[in-house]
Image (tube, rainbow, N blue to C red; front, side, top):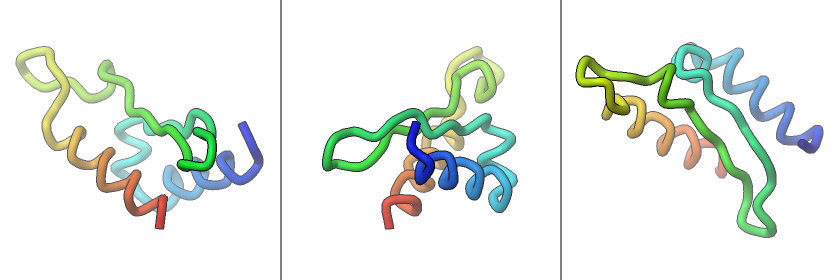
Length: 68
């Protein structure tokens, strides 16, 4: 992973408590399009054992925030 993406992950996890709680990770650059981030399902389960809707929304919001 590039230094720039390491810095992005570190910034998000340090400044946004939810990113840390969701175990957000910046994985890799994706060509000229940007980067790939993830929040593992294991850290974001709801009471039914599926991905929590709030986490899905938050990861999309954090991706857009990071792209800006």
